Image 1: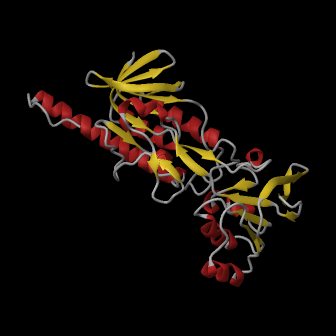
Image 2 (image 1 turned 30 degrees about the vertical axis):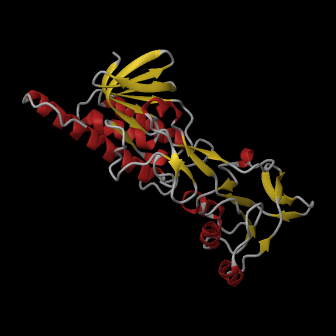
Length: 313
């Protein structure tokens, strides 16, 4: 079988939740997943009610089983391109074409990290970005905020709630302005000027940040704001490309509150459109998009049954 009501591209929390909603509505649905979840390096998923601390791989395995329980399919593979076809879309996956009346894209983002030696290797362990995802796990440790984007000051204030030992590194960006400097000083957060060139590691733990002048500032945890870019190159034939997010934090696929994009019949959910959404929020957005797609198909089928032409999504 290669004809479906819906093809879901991306098998994370958003994609599986959307597929679950569709499968329970007795829609033919297949999830195509490349097997490279964004949170794979993390030890656990936190802040997810009822599943706090669950391993990312275990959560996805449970989700896949639930989708299959209701007749949905989950395929391993990577989508090459998506083009318009008769009554929907043609999704090319490793030389095979899947045909879909509707498309749900939940491929997430790629985290682009600053060029600091050793930083990428510690990502998801003692190099973190979100206080709500990882903050409790690094509480009371010596934390360094690496200023790389517009969220650095925000991160400094949030992580100060979790530890009394926080240091702000200006790195290659501008230092804090006068008002921000007053806030940092009032909260006991020292500011270290100069470019950070390497993460020092001792016994498989971060031990400090090395500056360009050779100075090493002892730290146990590094907080960095990645530049997030939507994984969406395969949508180029449809004319849908990532655009700059209003926050300045990266590039996303814009959509309305229900996940509908400017391309008729194509919905998005999760980090590919809402870059800061945690797992729970991404799952909720996927479920909402799945429900909206089902309602859209129901309306189209009802019009067709009544012989009404036009008005499709």
